[in-house]
Image (cartoon, rainbow, N blue to C red; front, side):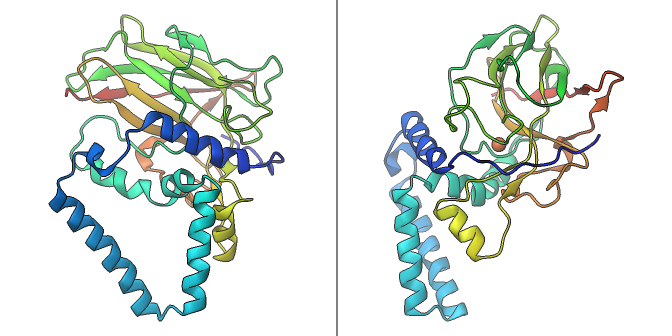
Length: 287
Ligand SMILES: [Fe+2]
């Protein structure tokens, strides 16, 4: 497939950090107890994190000015509502790798900060909600949801979300209508689905806040390759959190979030009318 030339987003990304924080708080329990961790476990993890930080300071001879700069940056990260963004981009992939060690079925990857629950429910053959003039290349994404034994899972839900061609997610950018390019598609009796949408675009994590400040100061790049996000769920089965990518796409080998995996890369076929088509099946394990 041809790659989509990336564009530099124009709206402020500051809204994005605040929206991600509000969304995370709304959907999460609070307190260490909510994770089900014992006092001994919290003690072990907290000591290990502090020891790792102490180790970096000693190994790299961190100075007082660097310590104070880091303190200021951490305060800014919280004030800007960017903790979910920072942790999802730079830390979540390791948590997901640990979780994947005990999981079967379709490969997962990170959730990221831009999921919003309670989107419109759609039939097995459906178009994602989009603006009448939604820019981008038309893309038909279809496949089947099965269990580990190959049985089709009727009534499975594909909760999908993606960005628009300018690299922004609805709910996190004021110029996009609520629910744009988001939806919960329900599979038919054969576990099949066919979703009409546009190809997603590569995008930068917000660069005008503290996360961007670090990325720039460290000389990194802020880009993620184009991807479709999915939560795939069915009664009695473990929900899969994953993303699908595109072969040959920009940043596919250099994702700032380190969330790409070879088995999650699609190779869309381009049809005579210029539109694209992909097939991908999902396999869910019982709980
Ligand atoms: Fe994303």
